[in-house]
Image 1 (cartoon, rainbow, N blue to C red):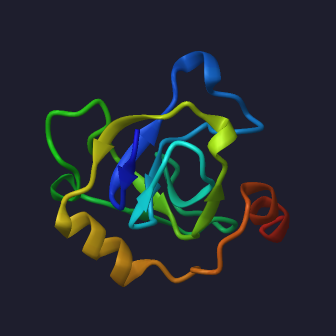
Image 2: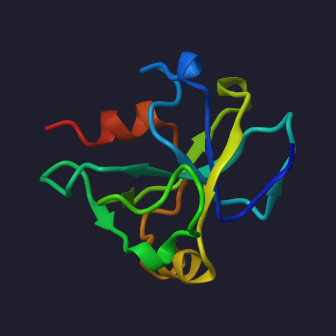
Length: 124
């Protein structure tokens, strides 16, 4: 299945693992296929703290009628490399154009990295 920028992807519960994908991700490439790594934005419920600069979103950033909608949702202010091997993925939600524009105007860490690199860079 192909995904496009703003699609929120997720995996079945049996594929969620601490070493791979533990949070839904927003596809941040214009389009991806089934066999490619890609850039993504991680969604979380964690508030910002001294280590992580998570940014609160609002309900109008999410399309209604999907599994993943606004629920005190933040995006992690970092562009990540997501690995196709963590799938198979399914579309669990989507951002509205307002949601895409919000992240485009707010995201400040656009040099992509893996989650492991991100955690290592934010250790205190």
